[in-house]
Amino acid sequence: MFLFKDQLNRSIELAKVPKRIVSLVPSQTELLVDLGVEDSVVGLTKFCVHPTHLRKAKTIVGGTKQVHFDKIKALQPDIILCNKEENTKEMVEELEKIAPVHVSDIYTIDDTLVLIEQYGELFAVRGKAREITNKLNDLVTEFKSFIAKRQANKVAYFIWRKPWMVAGNNTIINHILLLNKFENVFAEESRYPEVDITSLVEKNKPDFVFLSSEPYPFKEKHILELKELLPKANILLVDGEYFSWYGTRLLGAFDYFKSLHRIISSES
Image 1 (cartoon, one colour):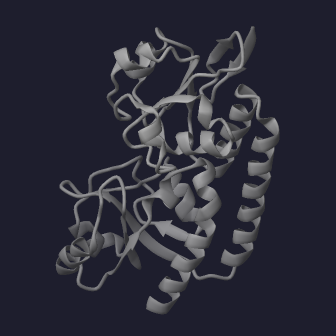
Image 2 (cartoon, rainbow, N blue to C red):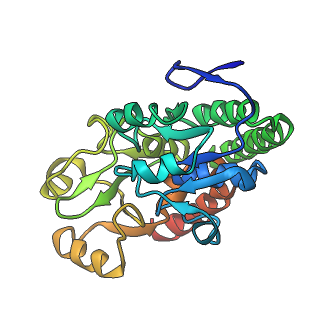
């Protein structure tokens, strides 16, 4: 019998290394593939879009907020992987009736590094996990050098429309914004608050407004819509996966951030 702790310090007992995994978090599904345990993944969500072939090869058990418990039970998983933000407490409690559940809790890159190490232990791929964490640490160090002399900018990061919602504090998005020297004008708000657009004109006045590609799929037409409300704002579409996904998606994020800063420099 093996005893593990997840990121909520919950105890997980396993009789063996899990060979049948259900993953209910898209970024964690991608991480599993990059750790080399794709063959062990038997179930995932409809939002697990990376790598692209995976949804055709595995059983889709629902979304991140609602799942088909009967489908998961039929898969006879050895372990189910969840996230505190993505999946509800009630869901986790129901899933625990089926199999052991590991819950991640991610607010920073350091939290991501811990998760990768935990998966290395859980799935007996410690060497691959160490390789990924070393590479991620190197990329962060190099990016901090790149960003050191860059000008700080105030930004508002929108994740939803009707109602307008932004990323506030206590989110991985806010952590990534700070790493980029983007001052979140809604940092005093917690999580993902609804906001009044006029507040951006009256008090916050960001240098840039970011419209994320997810969870709401902002497009060029929404830039035009916001321009009518905020005629003086610099509004950019940004890749939400690089700001909100953790795990190995971060390995490609820093090249993207560099290109974003070059665009911002040209528009400042």
